[in-house]
Length: 202
Ligand code: 5GP
Image (tube, rainbow, N blue to C red):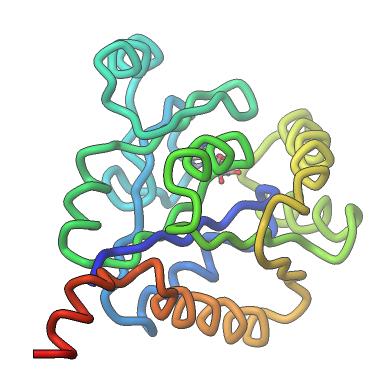
């Protein structure tokens, strides 16, 4: 079997991190891609768990060195996925989960096509997103406004994704996300069919 990939995108505050943290506990053989970013660490975040935090200069150097599978500028900070870590996880037949924005998804979709399943996660409406971002209390009023405006840009790309999840109820959304993760492991593209046929006929 080859490893395969599941991308989850959606506005900040829609609940991606909480859902993924739970999903990782309940689905086997998953590798969560830890991105590298230049944004400041939020309270409670841990280096190497939530992100790898580096400076803008270091990030730009890493871009030059071809360190990233994809990278993008989101809300004025850089975010990127390390090529080396992903290749290793795929070689180990893992389902690799990416929490990346719509720009990053476009890049890896172009590179990997059908090996990728994708989910767009959002809230029921803009008011709910604003409520959650404000309640989270990790961003200034100005940053919250920026994230909401960015959400509108991201929402315009929903149709490029395979699945849409509207996160009204955590448990129900989690159940759907887990089902998607499990079924993405069964995609024909995630198997080495030649090898499978060889074994099947021998
Ligand atoms: P946050 O600052 O809220 O953690 O993340 C902001 C946005 O950056 C989210 O939409 C998230 O999906 C996106 N993001 C996080 N890591 C990456 C990455 O490695 N590449 C890309 N393209 N986007 C990322």
